[in-house]
Image 1 (cartoon, rainbow, N blue to C red):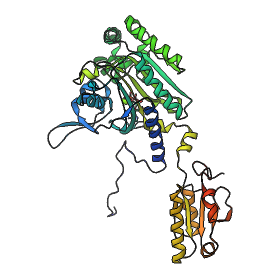
Image 2 (image 1 turned 135 degrees about the horizontal axis):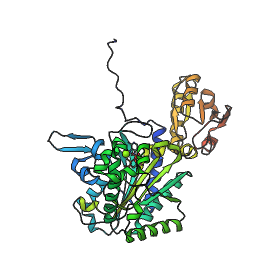
Image 3 (image 1 turned 30 degrees about the vertical axis):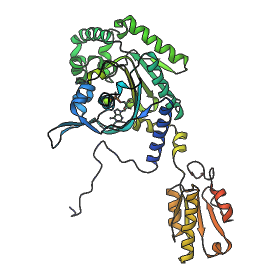
Image 4 (image 1 turned 90 degrees about the vertical axis):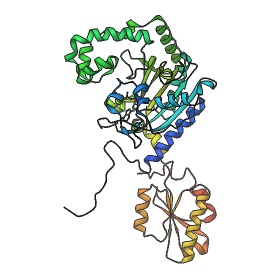
Length: 433
Ligand code: ATP
Ligand code: MG
């Protein structure tokens, strides 16, 4: 045993995002802000924790989230609170709290931020993860569903994705859904022991969710199960056909997935998911759907809502390589002073400021050794090292070592900015092999 102090680690299921990675996250979030803004969505930031009851009602007691994944605690005032496991319930709470029903409808809101669920940690599944989502509330109809999916599609296209699929289905209106629920339960009840443990529980609480179970025992038991589509009201069928027709007209690629259901009780009619082949079994990067009962459930008037949540962690794991490279910031130009004279050090610092003033990132290393300067250049993908000594000062020049070709040239100070401006060094300042 050493007597050293304890070294702390980030808690299981949480992680630090470090520079370079955070730059990509910020760039992705900026694309979301810009694209959602094009559709008139405004950003909302809700608190990280809420009353536990908000989620128990809003997400549904029987959902996986509420039944086993919430981080709940009692605060010093004896209040039952929960770290938000998703953001829709909070957004709807805010809609009701701020009387947004009195605004012209629909109200269009988006959010970006961390969510918390106590889950089995694995690739693409964390306990603190991040979602980018949007909610269209009020003035519903097929147009709302279609526009929300179209906005989502545009977002993914702008991020350079080509291998994504929108899976879409309808769970029908409330009457259709409860008809189907009855049929499904009477079909599965005799087979209950063939189901996975999770689905045995779901049969009592949330039987529809068994349909999109990932367990092969459930898949086997479901062969021959009644079809959701056989229980649909005529209205629900027409609504869904209209949504699909409009999506087709707008050139959005989708597949109808008759077994897709969402885990929450409040979904009605359209539900959808976006999947990426690159993610294995955690392949869903976005889930969404329409909800008719939620605003009312949380104390407002009956109001149409439709929205989605993108898993930002998973999205960034499968981000196309070219997009990631374009989003990785250019490394800074490095400046190295030759010798320790006050004049040279001051001139080096002043040159760094001049470069920053015209938007060129510059890192002044002072009187640093060549080896350590190269190590910095490597680590930071710097496009160039600038060297300044007595000779350069006298002749008003700078010695520039470009990283890409490892050549050293001496240039006049008046030519320096033009030489270092993009595309010099490439978008990410990457060195050629
Ligand atoms: P899954 O079936 O993968 O558990 P979910 O249905 O629980 O997903 P939603 O509640 O619809 O997921 O959340 C929307 C998106 O948030 C998901 O598509 C996924 O990308 C992401 N997400 C959900 N839970 C996690 C998690 N624990 N870690 C990372 N991302 C997550
Ligand atoms: Mg889940």
